[in-house]
Length: 356
Ligand code: DAH
Image 1: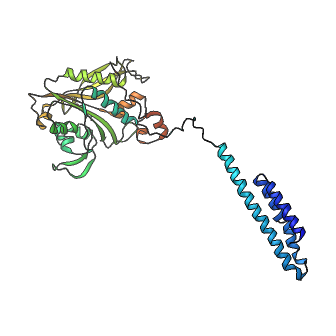
Image 2: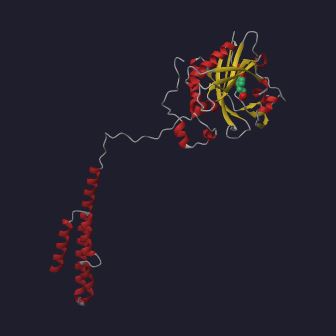
């Protein structure tokens, strides 16, 4: 190899070794091998070399080029490794930092109300039961003393389904949770104390009605049950659920086919502000009554020995009143902003107002 090439190779490899970061290294590469690089210029000049010397000169140039490239590669590997080390040092985890909050699901306000109902009535000795959404019309109406052609059937815009149940009666989506009274009396011996929360369906849809909504039913059957038990139980429940120890509760005579006597229950509130417990206005909140002897008879219970009371209420309604929710529709829309506001942490215990 000629001296000029040897000197060039030595000088470039010296520069390579002196480069302390990838950018400086690249500048060295461009100065030697780039379009206007020193070695590139020599390669370009090969054409002017006398034919007999050209082959040897070419080989010498390529040899220098390989040497330089090898030096560049080796240096780049060193610099990359060093850069990685620096980064790893700088990015060291601070183990004292708190973890990022993990996204956590939350309890829908309807389910929350069901949990609260179950807790409050559970403390009073009631068990929670469930039943099917699809009923034969005998469970939904007939056994509850609502015979065919009874006007109460029209009140509840019923979704009828094709086909019939095992009893040969038409199938319906249950319009109320009251069939759970019948199912429970047929499957359990008294004494009975149950609540039955669940979905109910009516062909009705506007700002205050949804074709699917929720009710909770309750049934108590025992010896010597009176209206006094019904009033005491519901007053305690309403005051515990709304967290107002002095909540006014009013029992008003009414009519349901499956109870006799029947009563609607009102709570005191302020109609103008929506505030519960004060204001002198009354708001109807649920239906109740003493179980009709004919319903007991339909379920094989001797009305001379056993008496009972029942009640039913809308879960959306009491949830809206408790939390000041004005519109029914967002309950079913799954808007995460609404849910973030009204749903609750699965870790928070159900509110039980002790001592009310
Ligand atoms: N099932 C009735 C409704 O959907 C509510 C109801 C009223 C249930 C009185 C009862 C009761 O158990 O005794 O409107």
